[in-house]
Length: 228
Image (cartoon, rainbow, N blue to C red):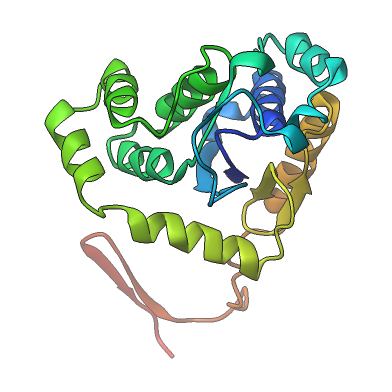
């Protein structure tokens, strides 16, 4: 099963939704056959670095949101968060994917923003976080100093537009089923079971061969030739 997750590193509900999905997967018996792919989405592409949350966000970041985060083991420090542009963070996350460290860096970036109040647009900060998950310093520097992985980020944003993503987090299961928002854990658990069962009933490819048809085919080095 493939789960695509559109999110941003400065989206409070994205971190909560991510954690709820992870908790749901812990109770899912087929979790070893689930692959999560994080997609880029910028909530505020024109954002400038600023200490503390912007006023329009701060008014929404009330005690209730902090409590939601705490219930899934997250600590949000709203007063000291450094709101900023996340484009380069998304580029580094895309690079991390190529090294099979995408999930680790996404978690590191979210924790850095919401809990540690780090400026995740700062190149030195991004390099340090990337190295902490095992990425090569010189490679990370090269990505940051060039436009590498820019197109991958833009492709994710364009795909989000095409499929009608209007808010994040946004989850797509096996490119067929969608779920939006930081849903309760039990909702994720129900969706995982439903998608698994539906996909088992309806495989991606359905054979149209008749049961009594004769044909020719090869399997490995062996070929079968049946009389017509």
